[in-house]
Length: 355
Image 1 (spheres, rainbow, N blue to C red):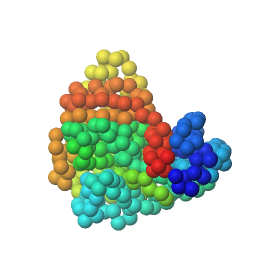
Image 2 (image 1 turned 180 degrees about the vertical axis):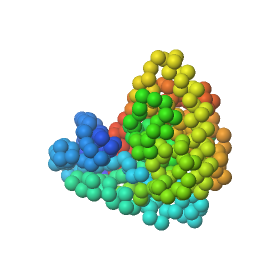
Image 3 (image 1 turned 45 degrees about the vertical axis):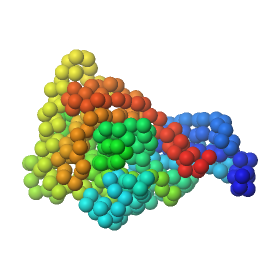
Image 4 (image 1 turned 60 degrees about the vertical axis):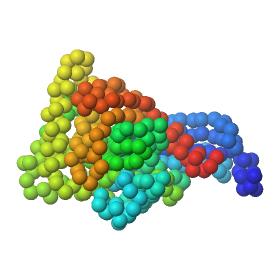
């Protein structure tokens, strides 16, 4: 055993996983002595605008003071992030301009990236404690479903309160990825009604593709310059789009998703007798997944194989309507697993630290 490892084993190792939402921060702390698990603590903090509070910083500092060996990992929430089905920077140019991004190749097969400026902002938000690892939600998602991505062509979806991470894999190869920021306020009307009511309070697409595997360490173009806003009646829930060559095609894709899903929405509401917020969220998630699938199928730059299965990693403990929509409307074989993101971050940081 190396001397450094021997000395390290004399102390506790503190692993802290942090997941930031717009209005809350979830924290998981795990203590180890060598490779032996000791204790675990979890807590949720209310925040504003994804900004850590004094209370949160003091909570983290208390655990950091317990040992000189502590590791803080954060799930990347940068709007401009993604994943590409190549590790070649030359080939990546066919998908996106990565000149202002940090990139990292995963398993010599696919690349995750994130905007440098936004990563710097993320680090500044945690300047009080520092960050050891910034993990991509796409890497987390592929790890969580690592027993599924080597099979048939499947869509993987990570559901958070404010974000969706969508990727498509076949035989272990990434084909497509999309990171979406979703404003989670759902009105008591159907999503199609919401689409006509508010530009600012519904959907925000970060149409880049992924983040960073683990990084030891702008926003998307707005729609305010379109000449014919009359053509965007059903796109008013899209705050921003990036790297979209044909906005009309994407609009049509979203229109079709609304039209095809509204019947299912009304039938399901009639069946269950509910207009709950959770139901509305699941319907919105279904629609976003449908739009992503339409883009995957219709864009020639993707290897658009037929998607057979859907795997949902749900951190919000929602119901089963999303699975029903996917199976009945998109004819996918769909499965859902609940996920504790903070604990998954701790697992990943333990692997990175070679504990």
